[in-house]
Image 1 (cartoon, one colour):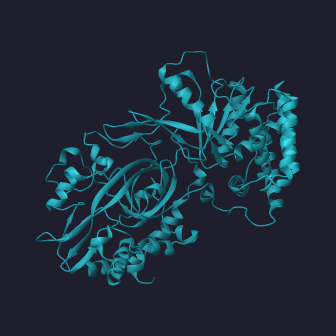
Image 2: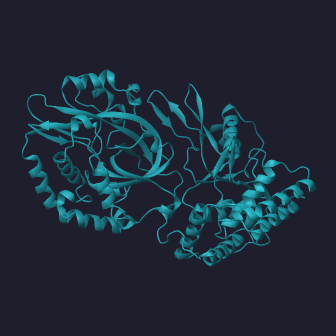
Image 3: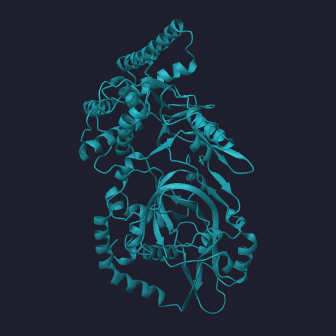
Amino acid sequence: MGGPAYDCLTNPLGAVRFSFVNALSSGYDPSSSVGKDWGVVDLFRHYFSDESAISQVPILDSSSINWVQPKSLVRFRGMIQDMLGNEFYAGAYKDDSTWRTNKYSDVSQFPEGSPTEMQVWERSLLYCVPVPGQNQWTECSSQELKNRFLDLTGQSREKRVRVDEEMTDSMDSNTLEAGLNASPFKKMKVGEATSSASESQVPQSSGIPPVTSPDSLPCLVKIYDSPESELKLNDVVEFLGVLAYDPNATMDMDTLDENSDDLSEAESVQMPSGKVPRLHCIIHRKLETQHFLHGSSLLTEPKSSQIFKEVRESLMKYLTGLLGNDHIAAQFLLLHLLSKVHGRVDNIAVGKLSLNLIHLNKESMSVFGTKLSDALKTLLPFTQSIPLTIEYLNTASLGPKKDYRINRLMPGVLQIADGTHLILDETELQPGTLNSVGVENAQLLKNLLECQKVEYDFQYYKMEMATDVQMLIFSEGKSNIMPADLVIPFQPSQVNSLEVITPETAEAWRCYLATCKSLSHSIGQDLQQVVENDLVTARQTDRTLGSQDLSRLLTMARLMSVSYGETTLSLEHWQMAFELERLRKERLK
């Protein structure tokens, strides 16, 4: 892949055009392909087949947007906050007898003169934002990448200009904004577009949903050649594609009329590229926690159980210190941090393990709660906090709501990515009265805690979306608002000085947590009978035990096992979980 036309990194559109020419020579027919991929996806997947190659591509964020160039290759890592339907674009056209393509571009080129033969293709639109609650350690330092990228683009710029000139000298072209004056396009734009975009024709001062912070850079991602079912709302995805960005672009609905050359839908008009950059996605991948780790890979080496034990021991020592030498609370906290939903039976989310630390008040919260919250931000990729106060519940927008005036899903606090850790602080709660909003918000939180689902309000109907969020509640007494899976009285014996953690140690702990969460787990045939007998005995001893209590015991045993890097439950780990539960109940007496 030596020549500039093949240089996927510094001249992606050149690579697209060159591969299009090659596909034409091999029999590709744009008039019957409906825009189907002609080899671009495989080309870029091959070029960026490993992490070292992908790491060369700059990440688009509020900092890099100031120096990355339009039409260059970028990555955007974010959460799909809204799915905006499809838009039509002029994907291919004939210049004399030669087919050319406008795929992966906002700007379409056509030869002057009489209407030419062209093909209208379709692409889907995703409104994406940086992952809510994403912690700073997950973000790459952009300065070194910037210097390296600018060096690469500087070396190839002169060659790229020559190639582009060769490919465009053969035609006298006008540049039109994603459209053409030909009547078939007019009909399609005015009456035939079937996307959700066509429903939104009410002028608004802004069609851009609010972002979580002023530094957050949203992105309008345009998807090609991908089944609709492949991506869904709230997925965390890395998109790699061509950047379209004009910081001076401003458009409003008043400029759009029937004689406009713009084929783009209302989404593009209401979100000018000066505010929301576009990314024409060529390849993408869903991201897991391990993709945010920098210095470590997952601990998947054979015979690494000793490594798991060593890292577990050091992390347990750290958590115990944070919790004032409360070793039992630290054990439960570790299991909580390793929990995830790994199955659903009816309305039950199997694998969740919410934790309620009680006997915390304002004073102890300022000491232990703050330290723990800060520590979790250094260990986990996504963390959020919610103050459980009457005022907050009565005023906050927790659930996402559809605004049909601008045809946007307006985000709520609980529209968060799977794997997010959520702290709920009830220590500031004072007596008061919940209004209708407060009652609704309290129910949303309870439903999230119990069923791991968030209700989305689409005005004419409501829909529950499954999620996977770890929930930690701080309260003075057992929370009535948030009935957690585990309630444990917090019993610190002293206040320890804050331990200084090296970057290498922090990365090892992050890697450990991510690896343990990713492990599959089973109960061997030989141990199933032991577990069943123990559960029967426990229920005979305590008639108040229900199916949820027994299910929680099994979840604790599974998490205890994976915390040691084991994928099959052993008798030792089953007994450890059983004993830990006994100690918890002793505290509750």
